[in-house]
Length: 250
Ligand SMILES: [Zn+2]
Image (cartoon, rainbow, N blue to C red):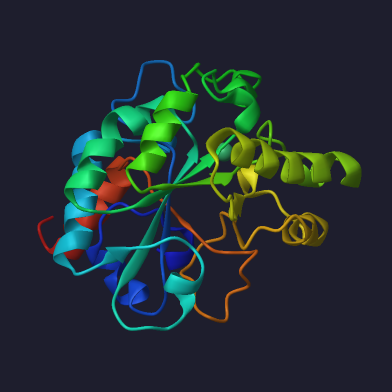
């Protein structure tokens, strides 16, 4: 199995890779997976999430946000925990385990849909899921976590005119900053959809970093507006058997 195609589930098979750079984990929804969901891999059940945090803690990882503390080459293992879209299930389920492990996380929000539903998914026939509201996001910030922008409306920015793409990228930053009174320094391309034009718009808008869905860890040589991430997935049967083989238990 090629490493480039592998979703993240447990630390051990990734530890060597994680010693070579800063991993940014990409989560979406935390908790049980409702019936009728199409994109099943976007859920991570709570016991798995808690175990994943515990593995990082035991292995000596500290959490950070993308940027200077991450890719500066200073010693110590680091991980960035990101949650795309701002699902309410993250607030309900991840908040307490993150606090218990003293891990901070970065939440990529869709400011036009705060307190609403995942409208961009519904168009594709996905099950509706509530998104965090303003009060929950304020609590998230008060706990020391960060927020970033995921465009105003969860847009595929490369399919928009430059003018509309700029609006999605620039206005989402301003809207989040105006609503929550914090600097919004990190951007995440919805669907991992980016190109040079979109990247330049993100740079011009005043962000410091941008996350993609490209696989890998980040080093000081990684372009800060094309950061790599590892998707965390609910374990499939093949992943469980892979894990069993790697651990010598299967
Ligand atoms: Zn998204």
